[in-house]
Length: 333
Image (cartoon, rainbow, N blue to C red; front, side, top):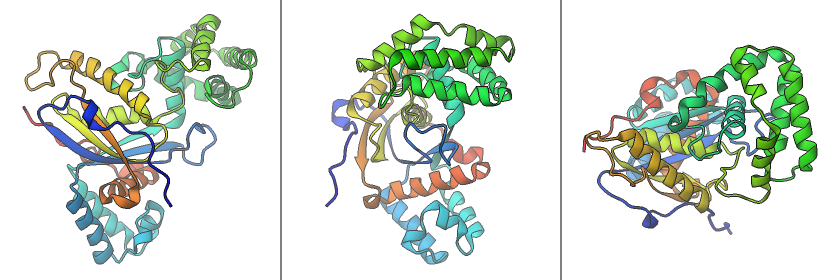
């Protein structure tokens, strides 16, 4: 017997207005909070806007034209199958203009979290295009830090232990270890921007953030959950500021109703501010995220297509060209 599906945000609680696009999503490479020691260094979050019958027809064509068995429609088997190159080209062509892929480098994600959480006020907009002001800083720290060898890895590991929401060591111990790792990294003299980030990590602010995590302050997004900013980016890409997005997603424990509600509100405020008076823009206060429904991927062929696309993109990110990364332009109104 299957367990009841958890999480999600039914669209009934959201304002649904104007044009709405329905997408189905799945990910590949997600390893929970194990962001440093995973065999998959990247996560891909894929989405398609196929109708159910279109997804069924696509899967049927893969099975009949290229002789794939049902269990072979996972990316690993798919890419090793007979005629895989031809099948892959056909699959990507079939999805051109109907799909989006968002890729997350796990190590860089951690660096963005250090900057967004420990230098500024934590926000559900962090890690998305709505909070890009810190992106150059994070990029500079990432590029410089990787030259520091083991001290760089120790610094990232100390950050993970610091903000881990489960099975965390005593606060004094994790804070001390984090600043010891920071000081060891700082001795490498990584450059003006990177050194400024490390110098700006103040013990009082770091302790305040950790204290909020300890009391389950839900205004602070989970620091080690990359699926939330990935979902936000996916929604923003499909919305274009002009239409709402209704998401069908393979079940993920990270996507709780409370977190999705907070993300929905942040997207409503931030997207309206970015849109301004642009023609066709969503009205003020209307979130581009109309809702999210959890499904079991075994029951939804659209999610199965997204799952295959996510797995292919994770294993072969170079084949995902710009046409496939971005959905078609939003309607004018």
